[in-house]
Image (tube, rainbow, N blue to C red; front, side, top):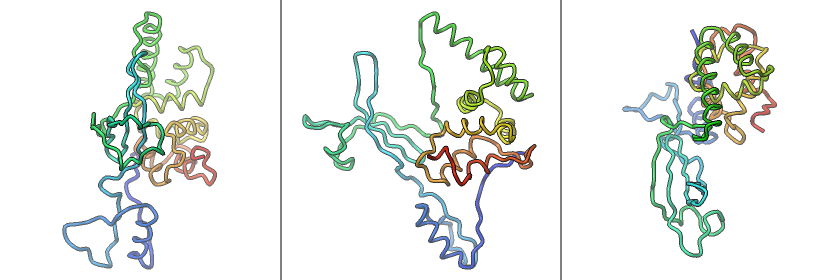
Length: 249
């Protein structure tokens, strides 16, 4: 059975003080239950219900003649897309003009992160691009179908049909972008020592630079099923916890 990270439990001589320390260090809060917990019980801590992670002005390119000012607010569960109310002297791309709290916005859209999907390619109505895209999507569908049966055969067939030599970096990037891949088979493949370069390229796709390690682990472990008994002595968790994690620099 594939394993999935759920909770991290820590033993301590003073678990109440340790819980407060971790809350201060990670920005967590104590989990609130319906009734007070006895002091000798474990202390569960969790992320606050909603927390602002990032806010930034962006330019929405509508077409070759139209660009719109937008402002993004990324929370831990939703993405808010807003239209700033600008005055003549305002410059949205200059953060020194006004702070975010001093600005006024019109909310254009609110997206649940669990429903968010990212499409790498835009539709192109030119015939040549359409034919190329159809071929690429056909190869991807075949790859996904074969991967659940035999990952090694699926990878070999993909490179052969694409007339490409073995490319661990390209393979890792493809696995990151292909959300339909079987998560258990993916976890098993990335757990092999021979897949370390593929695993690094896969992890690089998340853009973990500057992200707290607990948040990075949570995102990573939601993307694959880590086998409870890997087929080799390697494990993706060992790689992501490397004392010199290149993907975080």
